[in-house]
Image: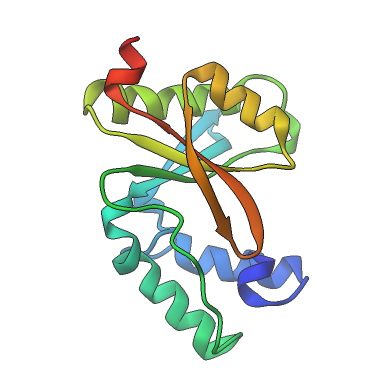
Amino acid sequence: MCKFIGEQNTAKAQEFLCTFIKSQQNQYSYTNCYVAVEEDVIIGAVLIYDGARLQELRKPVLDHIHANFDPKLHVEDETQAGEYYIDSIGVSPLHQGKGVGSQLLQFAIHEKVISEGQTLGLLVDRRNPSAKKLYLRLGFKPVGEKTLLGLSLVHLQMTATSFKK
């Protein structure tokens, strides 16, 4: 989020993100979020939305950024129609390394790919080979490359047909 707001201010970035998580009809909305809970505490979350709705869901976010932070910010499209996009996944530091992230991804795969027959996609930073290894192990396949806010990313997808193989 710091790249979006153009500042290395974690508190401002968290405030920015929380504003959108609490509201509807945007890419970071709670309506697009699935959570892992342990003893009534959220320990992880995955954010997924229909890539066909990217422009519609991104508009309120970009409008806010343009009005309050960077009026000239341009963000490349990270997804497109025909793909449910895993925008982000996070696990509480106290629960990392315990398989929570894998469980969230397996949930997403079950819901979108197996149950609904959708294509599930995500981007992974080339500088994060351990994350890429996890995604490949779960069955995601490389389908291309993208640049997003200056980062070189690998585009991975899983389809119902590739999952059955």
